Structures are given as structure tokens and as C-alpha cells.
Picture 1 (cartoon, one colour):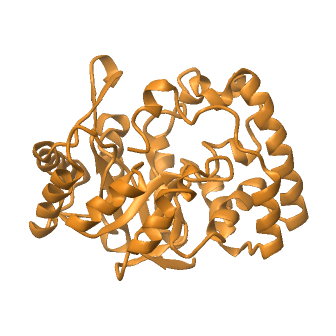
Picture 2 (tube, one colour; picture 1 turned 120 degrees about the vertical axis):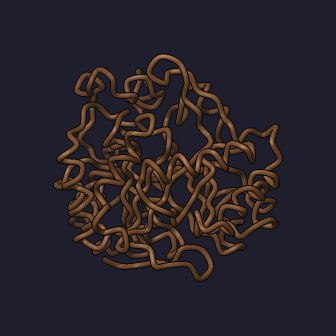
Length: 327
């Protein structure tokens, strides 16, 4: 494994982290034993950044991760998030709460579920623009002083919001979607993050599995897989994006790696301040992902990927989800 640094002078992070969300929901059924084996194998391979959130599986994911790392806590940089509150039947209704009061309640609940006395990286998952970011980060800074949190992060915010937050307390990580088919962050928030010494943690770095080349129709997905309703996987958008995938497959063949490894290697080549967190619940896919750290792209290959792939067709989320990002 190769390593990078969290923020300005923070702990070493594996160049690839592990997104644990799919071990609880959103991507079809998962097996807890398989998921824990995947986390253990990740740690064996040197992956130390584990990413979860209080809303994944309505707390199930934090409990799962907590069990998996109970005897190896010192080997991981543990990250979780707060701010998305799920209510109603099965958590189908969502609202955003980035209030200082909720931040204080949420961390205590996360620590209980994880079975730890602190988390290494605590993100605001989404922000309510009616709550000044200075107020939210001020409360999060209190959690650092209390010893419950070591470093702070934000997710899906603009460069302006990141700058305002950083003025209150250093923001070690910005988590945003970033991949060959989602590059919006590079135009706004990433330059500010680099100015401030903030690490960009790239979620969905292989396009929610699309860039693996293994999804050509939503008919192959589980009935409860959220990609069935994602705009990029539907109708004409899917057809256009499959044409994009053909280019990825061709270039991967030229480089001598799999499409998913090409997608991850492209992100890794974008700078030592970028840490992708591909999610998987299977050891086989984890090992394929980790091998991407040994794929070195030339400047020309990066340029070809930059210039030959059009923007993905369709929004990243449905309308409601799009209203909660880039705030």
C-alpha cells in the first residue's frame, strides 16, 4: 500500500480507503460475515481509512464496522458522518440537520454504535444552508476539544463554504463525488481545498460501480438497489454512458489493467492530496481495487482520459438529492 497525509500534518492515510456503506444497504443484499471479512482483508492489505455514516442502514453500518475493528482499532483511521436524519417507515423520509445541538447528540450516538471513545475523522454529511456553517463547525470544534473527534471534515460543500468553515477550525478532509464521470468538484472546491491543505476524499470513484464495466442494464441489479432510480442508469442516459464506458474499456486494455483500476489510477494521478474510497462488500473486488495503487499512468494517458471522455449523461442524484449537494 502507498500512503498519503490527512490534511496538513495529520495521520498517514492509505492511498485508497474503503467505503462501507454498501455493506448495509443501497446496493442490494449484503452478508455481514462477508462484509467483516472484507474489512479485515482491507486492513491486512494496508487500507486504513474506513468510511461509514450514522445514516447508513439506520445505524447498522456503524455497528458493523465497530464489530469488525474491535480488535484492530489502532490500525484504522475511522471516519463517520452526521447531518442526514432519516425518519418514517424504514427511514424513507430524510431531512438535513446541521445544527450545533444535533452535532453534539449525533457524535455520542455514533460512538456508542461504533464501540469506541473517539473517531478520527468526523464529517458534516450534508449541510442545511439555513444554519451558518460557522455555527456547525464551531460545535464540531468543541467535539475535538472534548476528545471525541480528532479531525474535522465536510461533505459536498462549495469552495466558499469550505473556506468559511476552515476559518473557524481546520478542515482536514472534503468528501465529494469525484470520478471519470463526475468532475464538478475539480472546478470549484478542489482548488480551495488545495489552497487550505485539505485532503479530497473521493466517494463513488468508480461511478457507483458503473466504471467497473459490469453493469450494462439495471435488470441485473437487486430490486432494492438505488441505482435503478438513479438518473445516470436510466433510459437514454444509460445508453449514452455505455458509450463512454467503451472508451474506458479500450484504454484499460492499452494500459494493461481492468476498467475499475484505470478509473482509480486516474484519480490517484490527479494529486497526492486525493484519496478515493471505493466501496465494496466482497474481498475479490477489494483486491482488484487495491491493485490500482500499482497502476502508473503516464501524463499522456491522463490527458487522453481527460480529453476523450465526455461528461456523464444525467444528474448524480434525483432532484431531491441534487438540492443537498454543492452548498
